[in-house]
Image 1: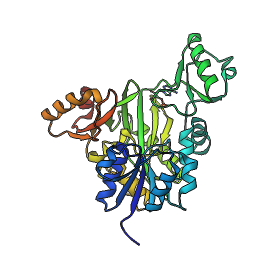
Image 2: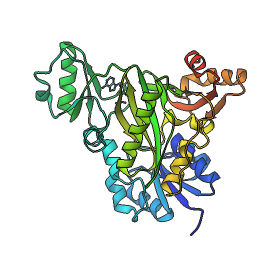
Image 3: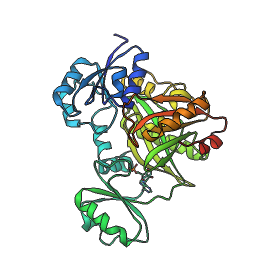
Length: 360
Ligand code: AMP
């Protein structure tokens, strides 16, 4: 058996790039598939330039690679099923289908994995919103295609119903009870098809629905942190997970509620590159190759700040003043507003003080 493999990554954005870097230093070769010849992964891998749903390009990738993986969940699952060889995609296409549709995702989380989710109801049309008990608040989310707050309506009073009815008549939706959370948290977990390994609990701060900052460890009790990690492990085991998965959750003062899953490394886990002995990308590669997974140790509390297009100058000035901060830039040529250009990871003696104070 050869130690080194050719790994095919569908999607050559920053997640594909960081997966490729991990794979390369373990001795593997990487080919990515991406519509842009100058995508971030092009700096570290060969790129097949084609649309993600181009079945001929997927077939070419499958033929040239031992193992396939993806950096995002909106991959054409049927197209992939048509071209992959047996066991060539250890993450499987079912996990894609679950995470592409909030109705399947909620059903999986609540019924199969049996973790706590916000009370929810499937909404097929505005008729299903009639007789809504408006003494409670809700979030209506489209089942497919929504991300980072897009395709969502918060229902707090009668006035919000017009927008909600419109959304409900345009697509299948899920109606969730609004959670009055203290913190948004996430847990990264990786599997190799048999065993799993889990990362520390991350605290996530969003601005305009985009992740702005991650603080590790999260400011929650040990008891809640253990519960959050146990839920992530329970989900991973139910999936017989291969590779890295992120579980996004809400922490209230006494409980953990699972919001959604992303079947890949996640922006909130980038701190692990420097702050843990193995990064979420390392364990992703080990996991999809079916290799043994290490327990994860956090070296020190850490803070990760996203560098968006509008932060480029501030981030560079920050690095000048803080040479111990780790700047990552993904090699994107155009610094568009809100585009994720890179991130900065800082170690902090007191993550609380440091984490709350630093902003771009
Ligand atoms: P999502 O697309 O599910 O990640 O939701 C985007 C953001 O909306 C989350 O990061 C939360 O800030 C907020 N959100 C989503 N679902 C709920 C909920 N049930 N209750 C309160 N806030 C929510």
